Amino acid sequence: MFKEFEGSSLGLNFDPSHFVWQGMDYLAAIREFAPRFWHCHAKDAHLDREKLNQVGIMAHPLEFHTPKLPAWVM
Image 1 (cartoon, rainbow, N blue to C red):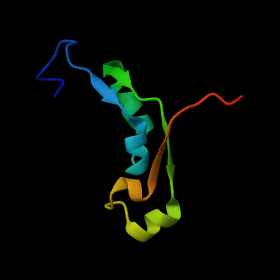
Image 2: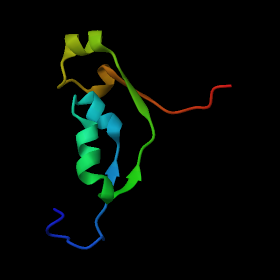
Image 3: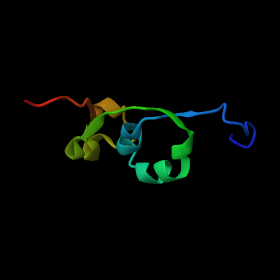
Image 4: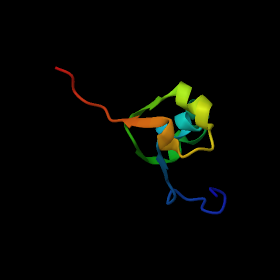
């Protein structure tokens, strides 16, 4: 994709929580594509491992994945 659009006009939206619930290495994506990130999501994800073992990775993510937004704790 980047070979077809060689200039700096193409950027990526990076949401590491998607890598987490898919069991992928988000750090590898950062190492490879960080210069192309134009927008990044700042959230975490909770995986319910017990539920994941019941429904499997191909289930709808929200069956075993809960997005967690950052918040200030006072």
